Image (cartoon, rainbow, N blue to C red; front, side):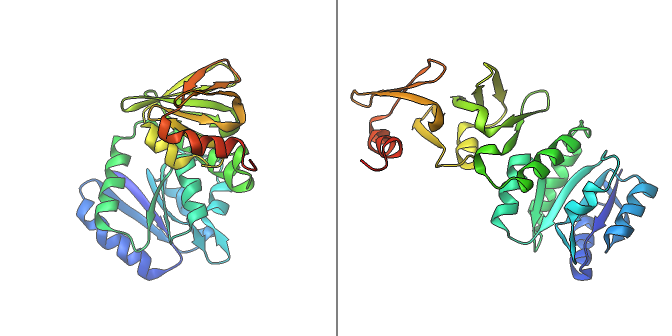
Amino acid sequence: MLKAIIVDDEQHCINRLEELLQEHKEEIQIVSCCKTLEEAKRQIGNLGPDILFLDVHLGDVTGFDLLSQLDHIDFELIFTTSFDSYALQAFKFSALDYLLKPIDKDDLKEAVKRVQQSKKLKETSQKIDVLFHNFKDGAGTSKRIAVPTMDGFAMVDVKDIIRLQSDGNYTHIYTISNKRITAARTLKHFEGLLDTDAFFRTHKSHLVNLSFVDNYIKGKGGYVVLSDGTKVEVAVRRKEELIQKLMPNS
């Protein structure tokens, strides 16, 4: 049985989540509902939850303020939030779970399932570090991403990624330090996550960081030569768009 704490400053949102969690009462026990940062901080210390449902906005403060004041984070974390494209992008980069308000029953079911399957609670702290980093730094090229691997998560600076290559349901990520990270996600997942101004899908199997393109070699589709010497094919249908990206004023 997982112990859960709900942190939300709106009673109707607490009521909604309590109602939905009744369907999971065999797996999750709600041990406290808190409306303020101070109360939440106290109850987390006293009760030691396994999972925290945390509202992003808590009156004049935020859920991030609460997290920054905790000495240890050894629980699973699910944010609850109204639509905010910037916040949602930050959650995706950090691989932290979130539920959009009004919370959908099926979305909650999937979130609970992911929590039950998680065996590495210590990774939550690393994901939160990534989240804080990305919220502090608005520049897309200096963002950090939590990459799901077979063993857990790898934290990678986006600006250090040279290219990504598809391998079925996995993706190989190559960085400037000559590291290859195999991610347990498809290339399509990363294409939707990474900045389309900085990264370009040259081919169905390749996504490249345009900052590391040294040369474009003409051909039917041609190919690009990256800073690490890798040659990456360009699909015929992507050729004109790539050239426009590389030479926007031509």
